[in-house]
Image 1 (cartoon, rainbow, N blue to C red):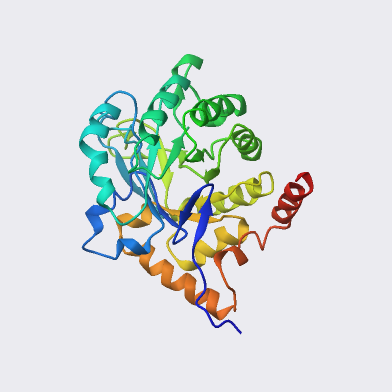
Image 2 (cartoon, rainbow, N blue to C red):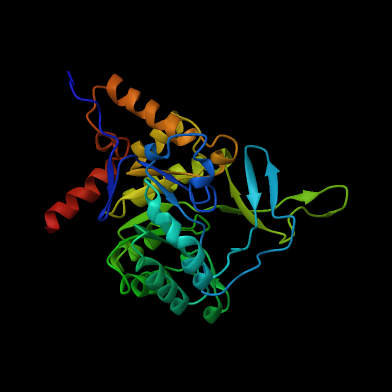
Length: 320
């Protein structure tokens, strides 16, 4: 019988988090916006909105469309650019009692290396997420995350700029996510965020026009959860680095599916728009679940529904 309270702490590379909950990029601001709603020291970390080398005004409106069990978005990486960001935004993060993870986007390998180096150099930033679901302008618009070799090249370039934890966000819009995950790991990723949004669109049947100004967008929310759980399951069988499972998490049962599939931590995105208190609630419910199952930590759940996960880690031990 356990006498101590279960531990919800997890580790992603060098980064130690007190809770396994990461607030998804672009879905929680910097955290400060929600300080009046919950105790922000009871979340794992806030992943900031992706920043690029140059300012971007983003896609034309409408940018958000509600769908059954989900949401389509086509924001277009609107952001003020890395120079303004470092001068005006990043300094305030040093006073926060919660962990802040930066997010980098780009349109060339050099973009990623440049922005990653500048962002990671700041003490206020604990780790960096690489959002590689952007089109590579040097490769006829091909998305980095959809090509194993491009993934490897962009991760290696970012890895060369910092020794802070590097979390690579993978796209589900591929035929073999496991092969891309392996390339990211071999190129130096410390962890993988699985998954980003699923491509989709909506059409207004009265105007006969696409509902998004950009025509297509990324689908998130509960509708993509089964896709995300499968992706985590497959990636966990292919790599030995931690996985942040994300895609439609709203309840503790949702979260548990990801842990059991092989995720070390979870990312919460769309659900924050309807309930910003969700990370604090999930922390309490996860702790209660561990107590009920007489488990000492989140680690006791990870990969327990995935035999291949155990085999992957055994292989790592054999190589060592």
